[in-house]
Length: 387
Image (tube, rainbow, N blue to C red; front, top):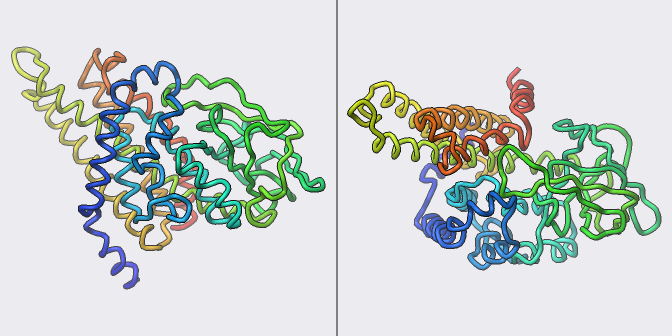
């Protein structure tokens, strides 16, 4: 306990001058390369592939990854700063699409051979290839241990049959870090392998039409006797579930950060609008009910952000945070639910119109309490650790 307290305290000054330099660089990237076009990308349901290369050239994609594979090493708060500034695009879909590598690459780095790491990671960090993660299935949802996509070894290949759904970057991905069943039922029969787009038997559906995250393409991937070389298996057969679970901790932290920034952006928009909008001869801030609503919104955003930072610091210090990161995700999502709702309410009818950012934030927010493990799954995880 003393060790945990001491280590976490070292991270109380979460951001240094170096973090601020990264933050400034990403903010300039968003201002120049994204904001002028984001509304068009939202309507189009995706953004140009060249954005991956541009983001890589600005050292955005490689933040937090090992230098030997083209990354830029740094503590967890470099990734926090990058995510927060990317969210200032006002599009959770853009951030999710550009950042699909952050959930697809870690299993390769943690479980893969040197050859696999060199083959798959550098092209992604350079913006030359796009990586996606394939876990969720049409009939499984959050029940990862019951996935049904099978991989049968036949000579120098595995033959895959099944499908993955709700996959971010599915239609543009060059490869998918995919969970498959190579053994018996349950978690102990699951493996991870890299499935390259264009492999025989690999196909992708049309883009899904979603409530939010319009700028990220989401689709279903099908495997029909899909052939995957045995050298694409990550780690040993039937040990993939542990890699999936380890990956969830960073994914849930990222979703908590996205939720906090969604709420913060909604708060900023609501504050600006309330100071300018007049009704009955005074601004909206002239009414106590609105002032107090804004105070409650601001308080929730600050508390949620600080708790998420604290959890991030402990993760960065190597302290197990499976319980706490689940709490942080749930709390951040509940805060974002309320703040985006109240922001639209302050805007009134204007908040229901697409030309106002709060309308998009309200829609984009809804997926955050579903992705990376639903609120209900988070509560089950927490309950097992406190009861």
